Length: 357
Image 1 (spheres, rainbow, N blue to C red):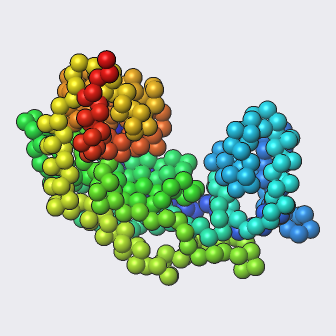
Image 2 (cartoon, rainbow, N blue to C red):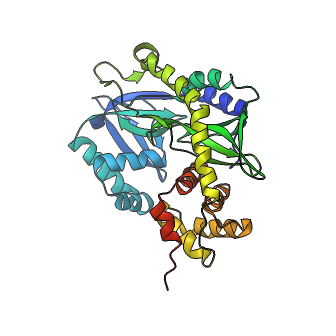
């Protein structure tokens, strides 16, 4: 499992960010992108073109969201960002004014980190940890395996060492949980069960019992808001959602659900793959589940090193590759893919066993 932050470090950083982040609702025709010393900034002005905030730098994610919302093709936007920033400002500013609308800006440390709908529901990381930590803390000897706070995602990965089963001689699995959130519009909030193999320190994120919540909430209007207060919606109008978060954490560590996933693992240890052409097997899996060419080479190496040509061996090879992923986000993606491989339909693994002459 890819190394992350200690839970104490994670909590400290979330608290720090919670004190300084800001959210604003603005009219797009009061926004202007400008170029200063080869860097692009976003100005937020009033109707008299007086700045209401200091000019803000723009993250890569916010650039993508601006381009997508304005209908500027991504490749063209990226090219202008690299080679023609003056042209980019002209394009963006024209469309800001041509199709005016109200948008939410999420700001941290002088940077626009997200350009979102004015009905984006701010399920913030601070609210998430306040909801889940007391429930996770009820688990005796709970282990926090890996936690991370990237520019766009929060991850908490924990395990209940008291809920353990043997899937084959010398192989055990423990019940775990993954909590993921994005404050920048890159995905839903979710709580999902995880299978953790302590012998190899590897996790597979399951889709059984996964609970999601989209970031869609009340409409914020510029006539009523400019700077938004720290999120009160969940606490005031949707307290049941916070309780659902807590319930989903308990459900993810439910013993009956755990038994169901353990059965899938045991079946995978007995599902043989074709040993005559491992590269073909891995290539089919890569094409089916969106594994990159570089990752495919790593998965093949891990599979060969393990000498385990079963469906379980292939899934485990993918989780091993997750440790070498370039980002924590991609590592988590591979942990999800590994479980999809583990539980793939019969016709898919049959296809892996078919060697083309």
